Length: 467
Image (cartoon, rainbow, N blue to C red; front, side, top):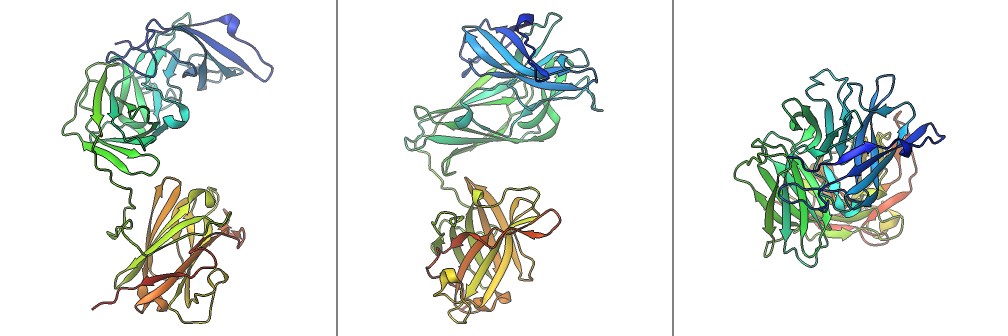
């Protein structure tokens, strides 16, 4: 089924020749169905909206194919102009002679130079793993394609089918939600999807490149409701989802459901509605997934980090223990740490352990002497990971939560004398040191975070003693 019959003809007078080695290419488009783009009927009727963007394939004399983005600059009822700047030397259409246009615009790729069946699968359609409508503005974003004719006229049609999830009765206090959908079939939902041009033109996710079975959407809540469109392969049992709806402001789980079976939609462009009320749903607060079965939300031994500007990189620390290990949980602000892929290690960290004795003190916690310390890095090759090289037995896991990196450390008590008794003190600082691509230490000793806050006592932690 044609989702949108859009006639888009090249207007020669609209092609400008600016001086910077490029030119502006404009398409005049019209849509016979004047329905709002931000919603679809079950039959997939569509029309353009201000700011819509399409990707159009161009080529040069060297045989290079490249997609360029054209944006809807004016909307007049069912008519639209799409314009974009094209590199000098490129003209519309690919080297195979086909003039592809894809909606929505994205990092789509031409496959004409690839070895595996480029004629059968001429394009990759870029389906992003995460789409944040709270920043970009809402759009259904159901994938479409068009092939230009000899007159450079285009008629857009759907590439796939889809499901429309509508969540209602969302609590008044929730302003933004995150929707995660994961399919238990073999047809992925995100990544580079094949566009098939044999036996029809349609999205064929099977065997696509770098594809994943999961996709995430974020959207603002309007009138206690949120809507999400999930494109799927048509005419196949391609969708057996696990769905989860979260409060996007704190990652609390609002609703979850797993489908009992996979369902097929027989027509391209068909939108199957699924309406879900979350009224009365039991909200499950977000909690770090502990590698040791620890419920960190319940742990009461904790300390807040320093609140001073420039020294507030650590949000909090929690602690517990068993007969073998001390367990620490640490929340660190992502923007407080280095974000540079060229650094091998970054943001050196020092953990100080005391038991009320000893003469060594740190200026930030002068009333709490320590007798052991442990050093490590908070990132390894720009990925959040605590890594230690000095011989103390430990393990770590890390999760990203909102704007935080959350670390869980297991530290062997037998390797640290301060941890041999029934209680210990713990304090942590993180600084600005890093190692460059050659392994040389760089940066400074200046700290970016303390926990507990400076000029307080170190955190006192009761240690498990076997009966």
